[in-house]
Length: 233
Ligand SMILES: [Zn+2]
Image (cartoon, helix red, strand yellow):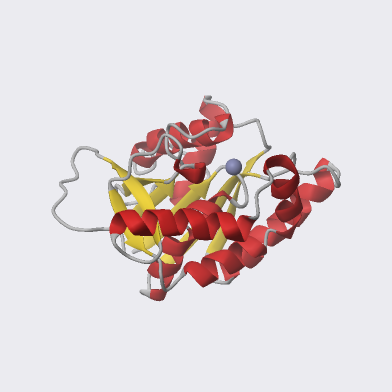
């Protein structure tokens, strides 16, 4: 299968679903990781231009750790809005990956970029395989399953399914540690140690799922997809 994760910012997929993406990759599936925004506002040290460059490089290095392809959606931080231009950009992201499964933010996450990313992906998943909707890329040829990843620290999130990431928690942390420009920022803004955060949330979800470490997901149910088999690893 082709698996596409779409996060608003470089580091969102690393924090919220990288363990699952690593499982997919280990199982031989093709993985794509997209950050819609260039991450150009998340620093007190760099200029926006410098930061966007650094974060693009970090995202590529992180994706490389699991053999994933990194895609940038072409937006700036704080500018993910629900308009036609954004919808077409997200359709093109999906068309580049031609995915069987799409993972994105939950509609109730805390940040407007996350919430709008969730909505745009929901809209674009269906539209991306309509041949008469012309964009820069040819229409994808399947209707992917759509899953929402956990929210930051699980706030407002009700889990429907879990993925056992006990075997991929270490690679997940390594992927997050590639986001060097964000580690200090997270500490200053939220007093958050990224590795501790990932381990604590994964352990908490692991207790819920009856395994050591887990990631939590909720599926967007859509016509005409019956739930007759498990899609997550
Ligand atoms: Zn984010």
